Length: 430
Image (cartoon, rainbow, N blue to C red; front, top):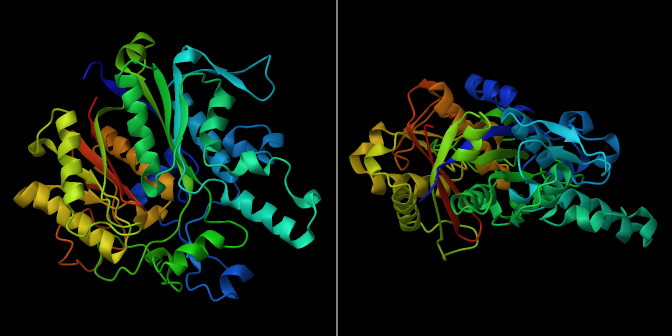
């Protein structure tokens, strides 16, 4: 590998905090973003799950965009725009209105031809699709359909909107590999920078489906029997690796990281928050829904990612797990970690951040990667809340219910998606 790739900025929009600082404070406080949903679509339709980790009251001011833009983008894209803006400011870039392009900006200090955007979304603009399709079906008139519904709902909209907003004319693409999409977006951006194809990249994921107006996304997961039905205890429902877990909790949000070639960052006096040292991806080729229960694909994934980073197994001192809180996922992930690290597994702390944020689909990996970078910065590990009864089939060192102080030099961020898509980032101290 040639030049190192640094993380120089983080932006987060989540159910537990609408910006990076409030999100991290909520993580360390062990705060859950899960709430009870009480619309007729949740309470009068037979849907078994009536809880989700939703984001309310997020608009133009929070995203840093003009009010007119809110009606022209799906909330998935709005989350991405807000997270991208925060990440750029955190990285020390100056953002100026473009005098020649209404509603668009220029980012000082970067050649826009070498400014890339890679943003994942597993589902895309489902809320826009549902609202427009319902109006069309009900009235059989185009008048009730949003004029820009098609470009609002397509899965590449978040990546395109971020590139347009910030004038990024380098490679721009969307990754749509379900729950692994955001982590893969960071990995693909890392490859661009590593190979000299760009100097700066905005990379991450966005998803805005937990609060769709007719609960269609929640209903779909409910039909698959993957969701928790702990409706009377919303904040205790998501419990990765706990013996009494009964499914995941749907979430939403976005996280965008600024990745930057080290020489470019140093030249402008920017500080590296962490290093993306390695990345690997593979596929179980087993099932559309379930991990291959022997965990061998994850074992190979971790070994390959560390090999790319030129690091040994003995260097890993923290794992940010996928940790969905489903019976099969947590068991398989735990088995794979034990197969990889053997007796060392007992001393490698593991965090399941979805215990607080819910499962934000494509946004979950980048949200967790952002938290991992903040752990590297602060020497504090975020807890896995609701971990009350250890599961003997999840024999790992869970950071349970309270932050843990520990120096982190090498962290693994793991993500898996429907269809067997697996991804692993190796994050190290800068």
